[in-house]
Amino acid sequence: MSRPEDTLPPDLFYNDVESHKYTTSSRIQSIQSSMTQRALQLLALNSPSMILDIGCGSGLSGEHLTSSGHIWVGMDISASMLAIALDRDAEGDLLLADMGQGVPFRPGTFDAAISISAIQWLCNADSSDVSASGRLSRFFDGLYSSLKRGGKAVLQFYPKNETQRTMITSAAIRSGFGAGLLEDDPDTKNKKLYLVLTVGAGRDEVVGDAVAGRDVTEVVKGLEGVDVIDERRKGGKSGKGKELKGSKSWILRKKEQNRNKGKSVKADSKYTGRKRRVAF
Image (cartoon, rainbow, N blue to C red):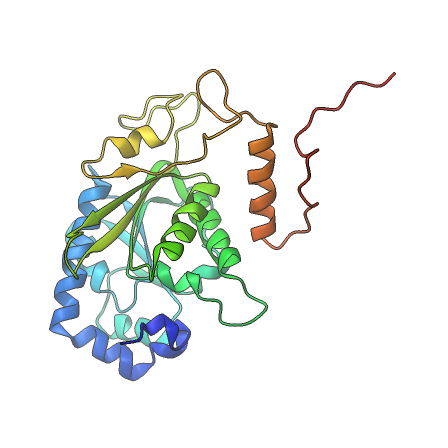
């Protein structure tokens, strides 16, 4: 059976008919409920929080955010899905937006973010002038900016293959997140993958258990069942194991970020990152 994202863009696939079928299916309601509860468990929020629901659809996940005492804003590309959310009197504010074009909120707006079964759509380019890498980069850059320091995001997704899994996790890391992956029911056909992301605290900040100066991945390591996948520290390290600004690996990573954003970048060469001699 073909995957929905392989047939049509999401705004066309989730028309009035499909949106109604999705929302009224008892099976989907049950799955959506359990995955949202799992996401909230991984977020481990200790107080009512401001949460962004990415790909909120008809508000099935939002119901659990509301019942858990949180305030939420939902964004989705399907006008039909959002219309059903309005008919169902969803408690959250709703925004019609394409996450592949970014997350259009002020920096530091949200304490946390969740997404259920949505971000794999970013791996599909709907036209020749749109790249999957560019959409992923815009999304994760915008998400990172929209979260407060010390904020977390839990994104459940269904990658088609290992390539998509790597594309998504790598894009998150390039945008600056500390990242971990959790796979529930890995040996069954119902396995579910969760990407757990953290925004690091500033040098002089302490957020929860995040001590100033600690690598943001230390927060991820504290979550049970989550494996750290942060590869940013390979090569060009300082004495504390952190990547040095201006090192070759740092320069290559920045250039790749700019390429994904569609910017003009000089080609890599053997001279990339090489220190120049001082000339008199």
